Image (cartoon, rainbow, N blue to C red; front, side, top):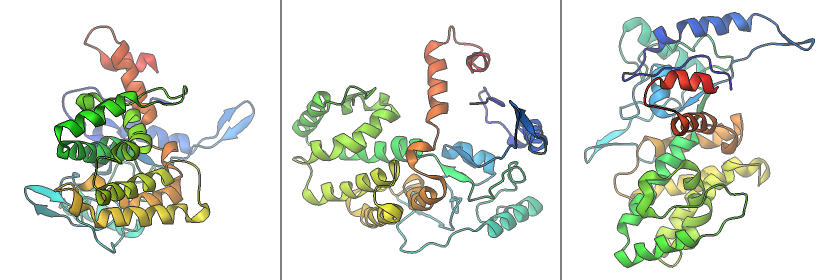
Length: 318
């Protein structure tokens, strides 16, 4: 991991100011041959990833609680029961590269919001893959820390006290192979749960431990989501049909979502609609995302001395 720049502060940065010199330096490096052991390499900037607030900033886009906030399609959203909801739609109109570029340029020219665009992204002329195709959804934040944590808490809240006790006890006794770094915490410690624990919870714990607790229809609905994410998580399991089948499973989960959960059709749920295309373009979920960056930040946070100069500590560590 090459650390180009870091922002440590109590306010959000302005990317055009903060990253201007870095972007210019990268543009220059792209024009040069990088020679390593008599072999020339060229720098290519493939894509951009991060959580939703970070992508909103770097893409110069409306926030993920607003209307027209999807980077990939023209879903508008609606305000329902005090929340912004993105309800299931059988067909959606996707943004293409030409329309994305035109809207961002128009927003920059008029200084008005255009289909969610607030202006041009500082990365627009740097990326070798055009926006929005170069945007990589971070499944760590969208799926694990996003929708898995949300529906997990919702399911747990609906259980009766003795069912909660049984479920927590089963999670504590759950056995994993020796090469698993983390076990699964009970839901009584859910506020401190880690993304890797949520991944194990989703793939290995929810369905078997809730089988005797949840109504059959709700358990089957949850299984649609688990199987969909599992198919997209690692290597191709069903040939060229893997992404298509995963998308079909998730579409059914999304369509019936409101029957089982109230007010949880938020933006992170909607982003799952675009997973199958991302799987086709960028690969399995396990190979993309922010796990490396999060591990770096977590390592520094747990090993720093004192409460000041975190920026210098992260820089020194890398």
